[in-house]
Structure formats: structure tokens, C-alpha cells
Image (cartoon, rainbow, N blue to C red; front, top):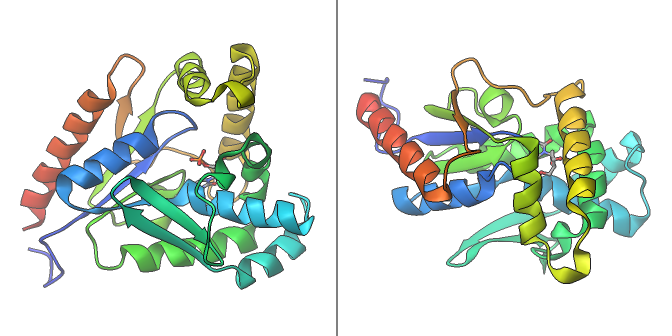
Length: 231
Ligand code: DC
């Protein structure tokens, strides 16, 4: 029993470092449960893209704070995955460039940026039935999520997965990608506000040796157990 809350659905939080497979896994888990998938990294990427376009450097906290207040960021679930709209423009591909990737962690380290996006994320999750992935979902955005997963994998495996995703144009060496991923981990883990840490009540899943579908199966099973407990 839980005091009359909607117990037909739960919220699932999936956190972890870059390249651990969070987005793919979260999207598939959402599909299986009939839930909505929310990619919070995409929101930080949209702010970074807007900042790049406005000529705002990733360390200009005040200007970033003013910018984020003016942006209309929307996530539109669709059959082929989630589309990201920035002031009504579809930026789903534009937010995945290396230019954005190399700056996003620093942009995401500023309090005004985080406060605004966390507010949006909480609104999106208010009615439950959400699978949300990011870095601080279980610890900060949705501390009451019924199921929290911390999904990780070795740096080498994560770099290799990113390498395979890049098209020939954007291809950089595997060693370079390993270095960038390790740098981004460090920056996400060491920032002062909402750093990437594993929530105390999260289930840790190491996907180094697991196929995506095995991870999905595991999380769907855990979700069903939590759902039964919530009823
Ligand atoms: O998951 P991703 O690689 O698309 O995330 C991009 C960046 O955004 C990542 O370096 C850390 C940041 N991020 C964050 O700080 N908090 C979140 N909830 C999600 C992403």
C-alpha cells in the first residue's frame, strides 16, 4: 500500500557513466513496459548546442543560466526513439556531434543549468510510468523512484561501443575515445553539484560481459517485481 498514489506504474531511474549503454537499455525497457523514455543527457546536450550557437563558452555560468531560462526544450517520444526539440527545431542529430560531446560535461556542471533541467525532468516524471536515464536521476532528480539501476562497464568496452557508433566522418582513434571517456567520467564524478555517484539503494549492473538484451531482460524483471510490491 502506498497512500493512494498511482501504483499501476513505477518510475525507473538508470544512471551510469558515458557509453555504458544507458540510452539503448532505457529505451528498450520503456518499450517493453509501455512506459515513456526520457534521456536527460539529451537535454544537457541541447543546452550545449544552444550555447555553442550563441557563442557562450562552457565556463560562463551566468550567461548559461540566462540562456537556459529562455530555451524551450522538449522530448518527443516516437516509434524510432526520442526526438529532441530545441525552440521547436528538431536537433536530435545536431546534439550528437563531437563539438557538443566535448563541452557538455562542463556546461552540465553549472547550478543554474541543472536547476532548470531538473525542474523539467521532475515535471515529466510526475505521473509515473517513466524510464529516465542520466547521472543524478536516482540520487537527486527522482530520489523516490521505485527502481534505481546503476549501469556501468569498463572504460575499454565503453570506448569500443562509442567507436562502433561513430560514422567514418567523425571517426577518431579508439585510444583517443578511451581518453575522452575517462576525462568525462572524471569531470562528471568530481563536479560539486550532483556528481555521478551510485545511489545507496541502486542495483549495480555491470554490462561489460552482457549483451544489451540480457541487461534489458534483467531490468524488466526487476521492474515487474517492484511493480508488484508497489501494489
Ligand atoms: O548521457 P550523455 O552522454 O548524453 O550525457 C551528456 C552529458 O550530460 C554527460 O557528460 C553528463 C551530463 N549529464 C548530467 O550531468 N546529468 C544528467 N542527468 C545527464 C547527463
